[in-house]
Length: 111
Length: 115
Image (cartoon, rainbow over all chains, first blue to last red; front, side, top):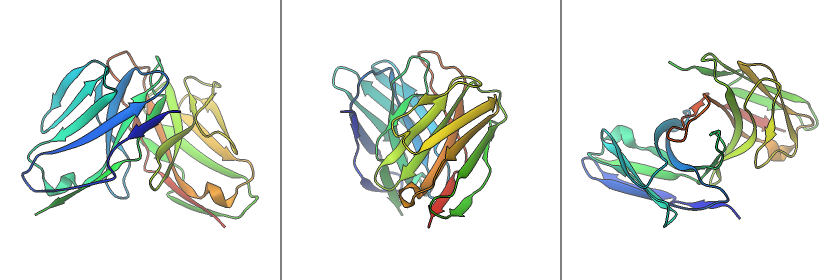
């Protein structure tokens, strides 16, 4: 079957660093994406890794290891506004877009 | 800014009704998608389209159909709504993606309740 596993909940304090892991088992793999969704809002794109290694975008970084079928999202200098759900998603198609999502990780940032 | 709009934010329908959910994007994107989102299950792909009049089944197409007559518009149709189709429905769009990019833009969602 196809599955993505990520923790359901993570709690951290303002200013801290948090890592959200994602392991996947899918038929066909072209890359790993991360999306953020605030309560009641639309998912918004954060990052995409097609190759092994670390991609950095401001306070957020994303890592991929294709050999381990594993990736993570790293959030640094946490702010209250980072409280949201974070989804990893595997791209299965060459044309893009054919994503399978994990169940999401709810991040709570405490003062 | 890319804008994806959905026809309704909230919708209440009765079992057996035919339901249309509309999605419009304003960025000339080739690809459009319909997902449903349920607690603890993440987003699940229902149908997608890579071009006008073209459609492909996603992971959970049963009970749904789609229509894409114009590039900017992608409709999701519930032929005969059932209570297990109560959910949040999200539309998304994207350009044709190369190997190193893959960004989807989501609409605000339609929360459908079937009574």
